[in-house]
Image (cartoon, rainbow, N blue to C red; front, top):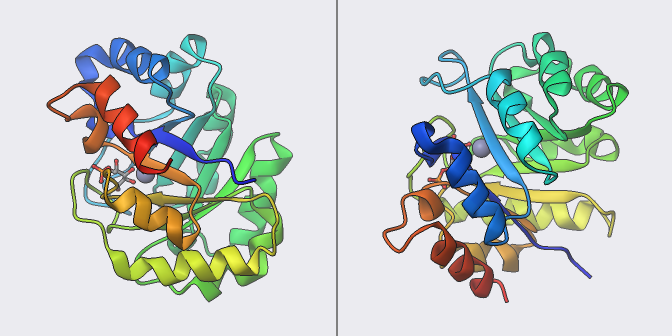
Length: 218
Ligand code: DX5
Ligand code: ZN
């Protein structure tokens, strides 16, 4: 049985009320908290760092899922692990020594993940599938919340799900997830759904937005 998980991305939260908003998301059934780290180099924006992970850590037992959109991620992995990250995902495009980096994440006792940008073929991670707990198939170009979902990424999700041959590895879709696109991604084979603006900018509120996403995947 597939375990479906919703991962609210705090990138779209009100940072002045971060604790309150995360608490609301948890109360309304969030499965893990997605933390988008941007360095102004791999992507144009600068967002947040390990301090935010350590600030949230005492407030939840849910997995903290750290998405590193940074160059040279290996330089910062240890500080995110120490801050309390449960899953650390690095970008293939930022990792010339990806195999070593994934091993390093696991050696620190953290679940490892690899993310691929829209232009990157799924085949490019074939040789590391045995060493990841999470794969993020980007469904927007990384760097900003609120962009439109790219449906042409779905064949990559399906191909990766086949390649995993039933192994218990999360396939995460990240970007443009709302109560319509979530069903498309689920049908393609994804089981973790990151949603930022659809949750934190929803006019009906965080709780209602989460319930709608949950009911859209049954
Ligand atoms: C994009 C980030 C996403 C982002 C998603 O670079 O990796 O996690 O927060 O935001 P929405 O759900 O608004 O597309
Ligand atoms: Zn993300």
